[in-house]
Amino acid sequence: MRLDLEVPVQEEFDAEATRLVDAGLASALSRQDASHFAGAQDAAQRLGWVDLPQRADELLTRIEALRAELVEQGLRTISLAGMGGSSLAPEVMTAAAGVRLEVIDSTDPNQVAEAIGTDLDHTILIVASKSGTTVETDSVRRSFASAFESVGIDPASRMIAITDPGTELDRLAAEQGFLATFHADPNVGGRFSALSAFGLVPAGLAGADVRTVVTEAADAAAELAADDADNPALAFGTWLSIGHARTTEKLVLAETAPNLRGLAAWVEQLIAESLGKDGQGILPVVVDSPADIGFSDARADALLCLLGPAVDDSGLGAPSGFEATVDGTLGEQFLFWEYATAIAGYSLGVNPFDQPDVEAAKEQARHLLDGPDSGRSEPSIFTTGDIDVLEVIDEATDLDGALEELFAQVDEYGYVGIQAYLDRIADAEAAALRPLVSTHAGVQTTFGFGPRYLHSTGQYHKGGHPNGVFLQITGEARTDLLVPGRSYGFAQLQRAQAAGDATVLRGIGRPILRVHLLDRSRGLAQLREAIERISPRHHFGVD
Image (cartoon, rainbow, N blue to C red; front, side, top):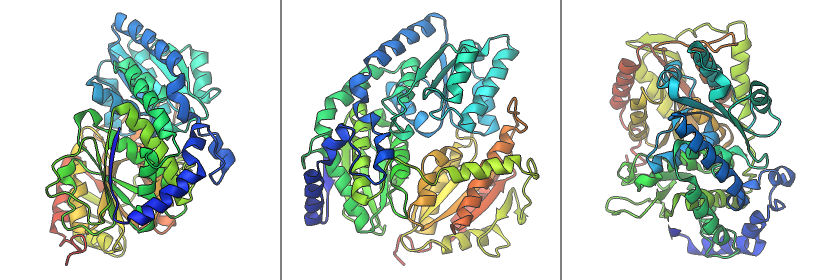
């Protein structure tokens, strides 16, 4: 693979690279030796990813055989119920291959209902959950099972499980007689699982050439395990840590190749969840394209990384001077980023294999679902047009004032996180708020659909640098869908997840503005117009 780096502080970079080489870090990772990391015992149980390419042949053969059976039976729609690391990698592989994989990583009732109604007679549902108890995945499974039964199809005959051995999902699959169960390696964390059953099974069954992806990764393994300054993963990990040491802790990611579409989102969850803890870390900022970077007048708090071949750099460039191009095949990219993230974690002094702040939001959501007020809509502070404002920073009485208050809370090197609990497909226009907020708030801005982001940047929001403010968007459900066997529906679950995360953020002092769209399309338009009326706060540091 090809790695090009621009480093404005070469002496610091060289010194840190030498330290990492002398420590033998890369080769230790390849041996699954976690002794370099704090919490070494826990880390040692999360290093199974390093040799996945070398031991994938049996899995690949099984995928290919099952794929042939499904094709013969006319089962042409592969739907995947999974979150975070269980969905993002296969989404990248199938996009690169130009084959269809329906990813259901949402609790939005409309999105789930649309997925169920797409092609049920020819559908296979893959249920992917490392823990076997992921609430989003289990809820989708229950709904598909009910739908299959309603048309006279045995649900188990259309379901495939991917999970760790011995989980609740594993037991359920055995009891009900699922079409197939793939056991994942319990020593591979979810976000490092691209080359495991979690990544390969959905992509392979959908028709992607996963054997080639694995071969690409295997061919890159020796270079990435070398204790050498020319090791691209070691160099990139050093680059990240040196940037972080100079308070350049935001990593702006832009894809430059169609065959890497979606890779930035996979990198985002890997970096954010691995490094965003202990009050530090690297915040990934995914932009739509190199043209969307908007660095011309940005302050020097971000590193720029292009994923894919270098492009005409006229008008591009990071004021910080930290710029990188990471070009390689998909298999190379997966293994490169996993090694580089682990190396950066060591250099930053954090354990890249835990996620200490993820569970809090889940607990709050469960509390809201089980509490006495479960099912009740939250009262609004005020209503304006098609928007209920549920929570403000101070005492705003209109939408413009509420946004002004939020943006005023961002410190000079902070960020805004937009959290949209909407339909990722039907409400895709919401993502256009990211560059708009970035311009008017004057800081780097991230965007994530909920609850998808909870399995990605959610860790950084709570455990990373405490300089974020948040705009949370929910919307009135166009339809609702009950979760079979549960006392709630998807709309209620979605609201509980949003409110639960807001509670956790508020509890640790993160400013949050919450708005609820009474009509999603008109509400988004109204919100967009209100943001446009806000005078750019610093316009990236330029008055």
